[in-house]
Length: 270
Image (cartoon, rainbow, N blue to C red; front, side, top):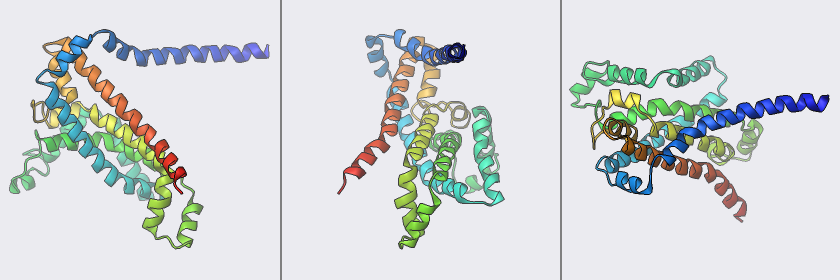
């Protein structure tokens, strides 16, 4: 009786898990079976592909660097501060996660557009952000940074404060203890957060479309190129989608295996 009562919930859980896994994998499988090597080669040679891929790689690299540089100290402060302000800031950082990308795009346009909140100041300085490559980066940062900050804050909270205290007692400065103790311990969480942020930036569509537009060679990232191709050639859109999925998967695997390689190198060091 006891074995039967245990196996029944396990079987039910397995069925639900299988259904979810299948639902997650079916779209990718559909992309794979819907194209051919010849179609992939033709798609890679299409005039839309090169500029869109280059822009996506360039802008996501810039946005990720900015997010890591600014988000890491913010995450450390959120993880170590006991003030009420930290709790408020943490909630504010999470807000873009629950907002539709279109809302973020409109908000950015109303902030940095010609008639937006900072429009007159930007105009006085002869600066224009909307419908530029900078707008693409800004949209990517807003939608992706919360994922990095959230994951990194969680990782920093797992750092033993006693270990930091010992490092300080042994003469390490606060910055030295942070980089030599906290960062190595929290590195897997930082890499996971960077992976999530990069993936979110790479797939950003709505905010980019509204704030930066869909200008080929200027603001057209891979998701926007897929949208453009879908209007005229579904097979081309499938190829673009498959290439983007493969690129994202390979780079995310590389990012996730980096901490293990780093730990192995550190352990092998004399």
